[in-house]
Length: 298
Image 1 (cartoon, rainbow, N blue to C red):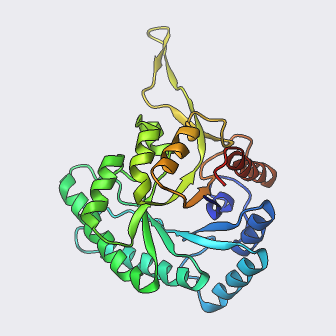
Image 2 (image 1 turned 60 degrees about the vertical axis):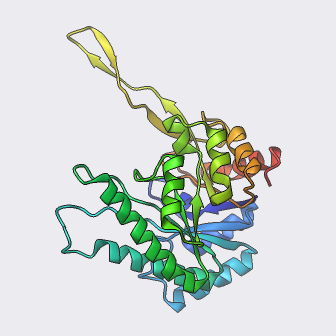
Image 3 (image 1 turned 135 degrees about the vertical axis):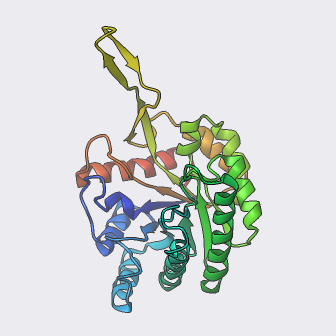
């Protein structure tokens, strides 16, 4: 597998230290990563900013660091809000966004754009929401194919979240350049069998994005009972890789047995134990490489 570092880890969204895109690329190379995944939004790579004057330094930074950009991460939500109806071309805007990222990807050597499906909208017909995702991703695939790019659907948003549902959607989309970005944390949180899910998804998977977490139980004090009430949903906190509750040994075993040998990306995309200082981010990024090497995945 090819280890890859996601630029979102150094984008500052969760209070962590921030690196500009070219500085991040150089930094990833110094940490020992041969490849990066770049977030397709500000502060890193927005189509609004990606003029040739912007792209050329990115190309130069990749070459100087001896690092490839293998993936660009698009941030999509293919839901149609009822309040907008058909007034705002919400889906068309996202198709254009993904097509723009594919055009940029072809300039910097990336062959994959990661996408999400949709968060479910209460009150809307689930089959209609499903069909909307399928039709939109089909058009995205057809448009990005001209740039030599494939889409990887990450198991992140509500629609087609379960592994069997995700494979069902992939079959409905029915495009050769549409595959999966299959991660462990979502099925682990929802109680799927990590090994079996990974093995099932592996033949269709281009990338996996990895992070580790602990579950923090939540309670609320009830003074009238002089007692605590257990809250149903735990708080989930990011921790250094290999120290959380996710059985990554089983996950990677399932991927390998299913035939996956692609891109394994590390991300820090939520508040992290130890804080957001650069030294802690780097320690966690280096720890991922060590864990992967110790377990013979790279």
